[in-house]
Length: 278
Ligand SMILES: O=C(O)CC1=CCC(=O)O1
Image (tube, rainbow, N blue to C red; front, side, top):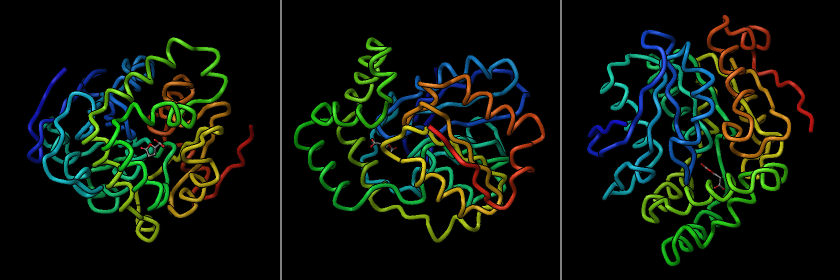
């Protein structure tokens, strides 16, 4: 467990795995902390050098006193990479973390050796929905929307099959500071990378949980089509957080893409999207 003041904000981060191995930095979703990657880290740690961090306003990281957009989040990530001495890394972004990763890929392509986008899209949600969520959270706290978000995060199979874990992840969500959560909602509300992601040159793997209700697979696939060198994979049965519901499959897709010559990328250059099935 480490802390660093980067881009003016104290971020909590954790570096584990094989020092000197291929580097991957993971960027979290709204309302989550770095523990969502624990099972993926168990799968990859023997071979990869892994960096996890809590976004501003989440987990053990500081809440920014000033509002921050996606560009500020991308600057936080660049500062963290500088702090740990990584000139480049593969970047794996989940949901809003995917938007942050796409922003970095557009603005600072030299910092990426590869891009993995998970359950994300160039534009997520609507102005009205984000404004309603911001109001609810600031007036009543994150717990007020907890049940509703959990329905969107997890598949029915996980909710019914793993009730204790499901309750634990709900506690993680509801402990997110309201100010930090609302600030990230504002960043999501104001972000639309639809017109810019065509300029991403990094080899890209796009992953969707086939049962994701927050960023449905059709939406994720549409983002994949807009990125020139992207391959698309859906994970059957998984909701919005495949790193929790299907960590072995997530790790194996990452390993195949990043470690074994990027076979997915080579096979599917040009944004062709493989069919997904439930
Ligand atoms: O909370 C949700 O609805 C899911 C989500 C949208 C953006 C993000 O990071 O998580």
